[in-house]
Length: 367
Image 1 (tube, rainbow, N blue to C red):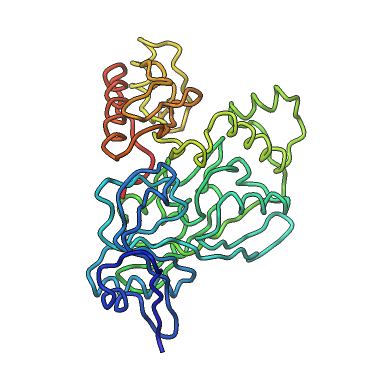
Image 2: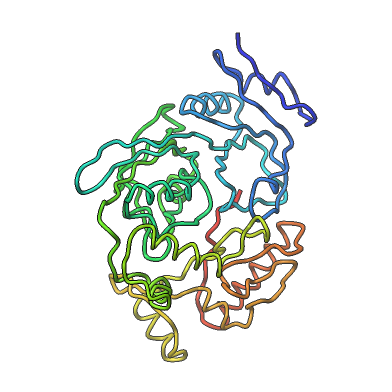
């Protein structure tokens, strides 16, 4: 017999509809309706989800998508909510909260270890565990909020590392085919804070697990400039994964506000990538422009620096505060709606465009 458990105290539209969508075989899912998504995202803005449920296995994902398709209802996968912005109208479909667990050593040799991690695992918990195992490769990405399944979507990275450098493949549920398939690193088409999962294949796959290859050797310099400065200032010259993790966490604590205390979505804007000719033009007017070579005559400009030059640092715009220590971060100080955030974002983008003739881009996804 099949069961569906409706969470009491939360209104629902039609119990029979919920039964049809979520009931399968000998399992059940807790289904909630009319759920304020601002309670599940770190920016603390946005409307309600019509339906919300948690998934704990590949089979949960498959059954939910198959039944949602029968009802012609859209599905959105939500991890930790740290990289998602919700509009005021909410989501008239099913929000599937990714909770698939798992941490498994797939292979191990004298050079490194291959691990497979469930998409619902907390990213920083995984980094901590690999560091404790003496493995290197993702230690500089310590402190990044969110789940493992969300990491490849935007190709997360920090302090000179990004997940694309260590990811071998991901297993994804193919919404059209109706089964799990494997995508190699190359097939993911990783680029700076981007992949097929937020580009050409957006909405076509749900990541269910990630396989990484990490090293047994210690991290080696040169390190990202901010990290190297911290190490030099603290006279640290012996580098281990734990040393780098501790340094990164200390830097992040100083520069990035805790979303549990100050609602924010981390880096709200991507750092800007420009061509060599654009950099040369920029340097003619602003010879102190910080820039970093990316290869192929492409350069990264810190978007926080661009915003700071416009005078927006520390400003409160429609209830949204530009963080006074890191202009990439927008803090929801008193905004009550997505429209407040939209107005603040537009003002900041416009100020950078007017001063530098550069179009900066938002990093978080929108629901």
